[in-house]
Length: 117
Image (cartoon, rainbow, N blue to C red; front, top):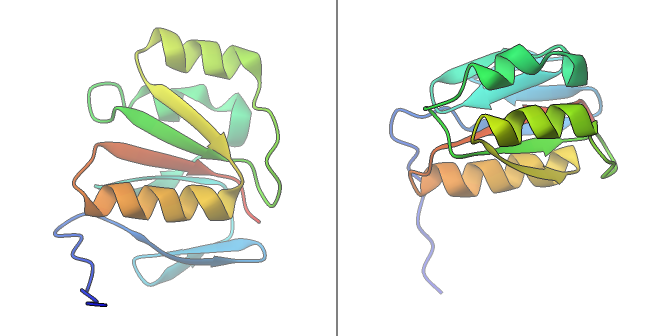
């Protein structure tokens, strides 16, 4: 088996996560956040649709991390993202972090909106 180091070029990967935090760019963040290739920004959770809608044209899909367990996201938020042309995949936050990093390393136009674990 051959191992290769993942190259994210100039993109911002999620370096780690744990109980109540995410590590992005060497910094621990203890609140919900939205991560794109350009960096991380605060996200107010499901009621803060605008942060996600501002990504129209920059991303094709967003991974919604629902915390430690996979739960449903509000239908209204899903509808807003669908209408804006942003694909949505809902999963627990650890899975969203891993999936985001894999697709980011492939150069895909992705984002992750994450609730803490």
